[in-house]
Length: 117
Image (cartoon, rainbow, N blue to C red; front, side):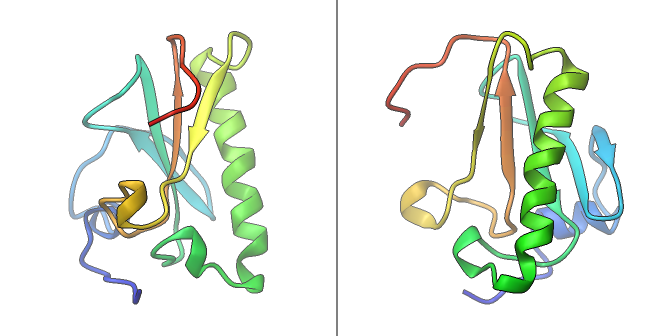
């Protein structure tokens, strides 16, 4: 799938749409989900355009690792790291990806079940 630079997350990155930002650095932006599925629900997105995880290339390895680091950092800052948190990446329509800009869900503050979905 080709990347659509008019998706809502691209617009948030360009500051065309406001977001409740909790973290930003040179590689990523993290903000609160507007339809939270847990008391803490933050989305971490790369600043570079990647539509979905399966579209990542070997050159994207550094930013993918950075997204995981950022997810842990956000969990610590939000106070959910010790009790437990879940990260999720939906890849494609069958996995319920609705915005085709790679994003990591960081969720915590409640008990989760297994298997998800």
